[in-house]
Image (cartoon, rainbow, N blue to C red; front, side, top):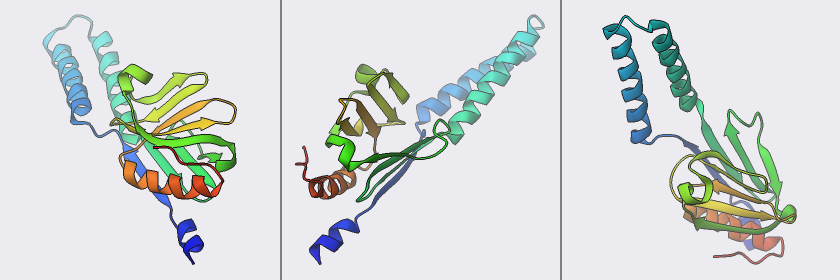
Length: 167
């Protein structure tokens, strides 16, 4: 019975860029561009292009979301709109898994789809993440706002695969 209960644990999380500072930045930039467009007759086309591009970037941020699922098979992650479908990472291909705090700016240069080569991050906010180290040595950090729940799921499933959980 205990074994069955363990495998019924499923972790799910969906995150979006919701930092008020980000939205304030967009509002100020768009406001400044609109003000400049109407107050000065020179370079109206350039300012209009700036307004359109900034509005498009703003709209894109409204649709960005990071979806994470953990179950007995492994970890599923999708960073919409960059990933068309979920990426699946089976427990059998993961050498180490832990929930840890990190420094987004220092370690990855910020938030979003970050990193190059073998050390990547998918994050939208905060300083807590699910750190995966794969059998081939590559690393992936998946941001989370539910560190405790993610740790419980990782500990349950990762341990079942014969690994010792970290942290």
